[in-house]
Image (cartoon, rainbow, N blue to C red):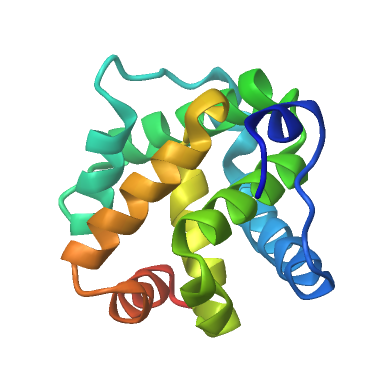
Length: 160
């Protein structure tokens, strides 16, 4: 059983398989966001809740301004919550999702797990309540058809 204190004091304990998955996700997320990092650092952040903006982007109704705001919010999250350490943020996201999903997480194909880590991290979960937000994420995904079908939608959206 993981303790809240352990999560706050040090990085999560991950299996070797998940460490490699985190590295690949970090690489793909890093590549996807590095290209817009310069503009996002100085871009406007919206006063609108970040999940609302991401929801529009995922539904296909988002605008260029939504993407700029979401990028700026994501980079601010990495900077403010994680001291700029995106790999650490992703490791915590993987750990939180693995805890929320339990054995179902290990049964997910790696591509689907990567897709869920990408989306969960792009939602910028608050570090101090990340485990709770991962459970909420799992519940929303379950209502949307489950981890595999929803993962397929994320993969399609990202062109992975």
